[in-house]
Length: 450
Image: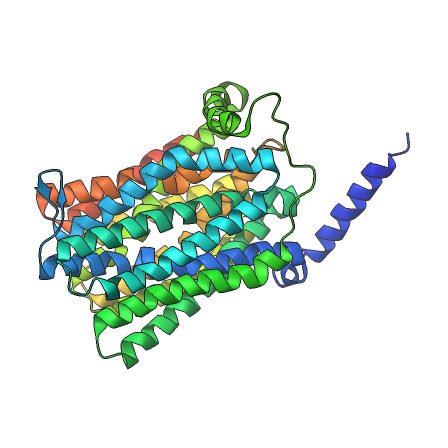
């Protein structure tokens, strides 16, 4: 039987795509893949500068210099303020992100929604820097609350845009190249975040005041996010044809809000492989996201690292992580995606143990940072690739809404546990050890995933 003309065209397109994507360097020639991956470059300034490097220590320093805000009747300790804001932000995402994914699938306008959230998040990130200037004479507790609210909203838009961004992965790459394309995006993201962070280090060098340098860095993160997403992703990434789903008699908002929760309840029966993976990912990526969120606080509180050393450390992680993401993409193709993820989780557990028992100086901190950087991008890139294999057609954004809930929206639990252990024990090192439980549970669930 002769193949249909439609299937012949699809096969020819797939063979052409495989030839174009036969190496990491060749991915730059694919306009769709490059435009998609450059969004990782653009938004990584927010995750690197704001989430990982500066906002946590900045809020802690504001509370240390004055009075921290109250949570109900409890005045928060400086090192627990930022983790609690992270928890609030991602708890909101827990309910919102699957809805946004479903709306993207129904409308068939994933790119337009993604770019709308990107612009909103970039503007709010700029306001995070400008807000510190406008609130210069305000009480520290009020200043912390205002900046915290802006961060919660910016992080919400960040998570919403990433949900839609991830859902493009099955559209722009074949299954055989999924690990490579996903790792390519993560690698570009780390390079972009690293270059943005290097510019921030120049602010600390040339500006006389530390607070002014931090505020300028937040503005830079917002502008970087806006500029590169508009210049590359908006121009090169195309809306995917045929992805729109019918409403079937319901209005958009009814279907958008009801369907994700119906899908979640049905997933365990209809898509048990996707369900079990999300359970594993819920735990082990919660550990990854918590380490990212509180690493700077740990370095400052336990090892008394100064701002320039901290920025140099994170810059070091960014560029090593780019190579780590590419290496694990290669490793996933050789030994299998699941085995490569399990190997990375063993390294994460070793990192937690080493941080608790033997980390005592800056030299050891950089050695540990090398291990973190090696597995950081690999764990995340391969997890995105593995889940994309389990996603049903025309429901990519909806399913990646649940994935993003596990990646960002569920990561309220780790920072919350970290903050509670700090509150109860006053020991930041012991709080770090508690995060190892998330890696252990995630490893066990993934090990038993078929």
